[in-house]
Length: 140
Ligand code: GDP
Image 1 (cartoon, rainbow, N blue to C red):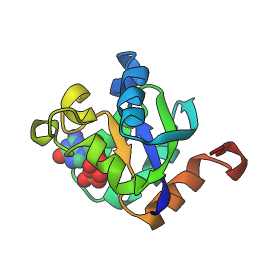
Image 2: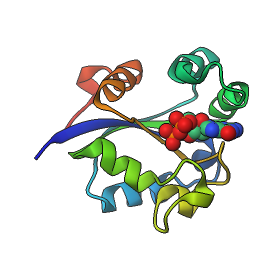
Image 3: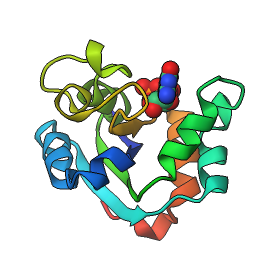
Image 4: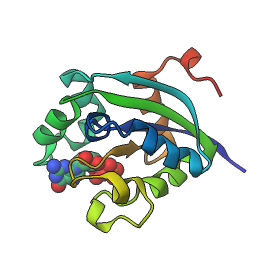
């Protein structure tokens, strides 16, 4: 049994539509525990750093605009195989391809406004958590 932490963002399309609780219900139903959570309005610098890996992609400007357009909820989720488990709960990047019952199928609006971010590996999870949370803010 591997208990992991993963980093999650509920994106602006979620906060704008007052769906934070609805998305959190799917997270908790999947057996993940929300061990840290705060609502922030990301700065441009924070968003550019966070999505730096996509800086050369044609959608980068649109992505940064979207992430800074309204508040987001940043979270640390804990659970068995939390990184893959949360990717499964989120569903495919493009909501049109997401499976029924996933966050993106139920709530996402488009490929850009796709409701949630979840880390893709242990190394990125650690870096992403450290960008937004101090160790003493994570209470398992
Ligand atoms: P993820 O790991 O499933 O979030 O997907 P990626 O790492 O490939 O992409 C990061 C984020 O960039 C996605 O969640 C989308 O919000 C955004 N994104 C990816 N592809 C596109 C695209 O073609 N157009 C737009 N507007 N946004 C995109």
